[in-house]
Image (cartoon, rainbow, N blue to C red; front, side, top):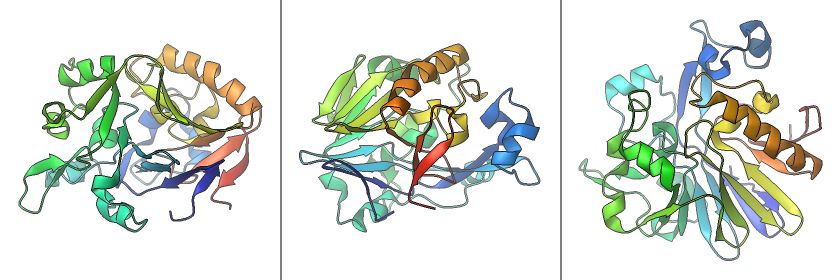
Length: 282
């Protein structure tokens, strides 16, 4: 998306990091299908399209990527399982904006699931793994990195070791604990919920702010605090964090950006969770 969302002096671009499909029931957990399907009609197999849309944040001080897409390392079987409908090519997405792989200063991961972290490492033309953004510091919560590198029986299927090949050895891994400013106007805050080390990203310039909530808010319909995913490892924490974060942000007129939503890239909500403005415009 070449036209940015402006947050003061900061520009936000939404990129295509590959498209997959997931079961609609899993995306909405205990929410009855008769409710969520009105908002997101599933296909005949009950699957929903998921965007995987990294954000390029241009600030006066840095070029920052939030999330990395699904990457180009899927096997043919994995492509079938996850119903990949649009391939990953983040370097080309960035090149269209005049940005090279080596130009990225920071890569922020809300968490390390394969669909968010798949583009940390890419296969070169000869199928050799290499860091996609070789000069970027990769910002991950310390507890998330611990879980990603030593997953439990539930998380092992979503933390794929191939996505982290060479990252720690490169010296480009920046582990943070809790809230931290990454660059002027861009800040991370650990929330837990979806995963133990999940973090959100605040993007602000002056009184304006955008809030990237990762998988706490995958679709705009998840603005209802009780609409959560079956994939959430700590569901009550997701509900609590949504209540804590969204109320003040909505009252302040903040934008919310979406990684997975196939309908809306970013929006503003009213106090009832209704979309009152969206980017790009309808």
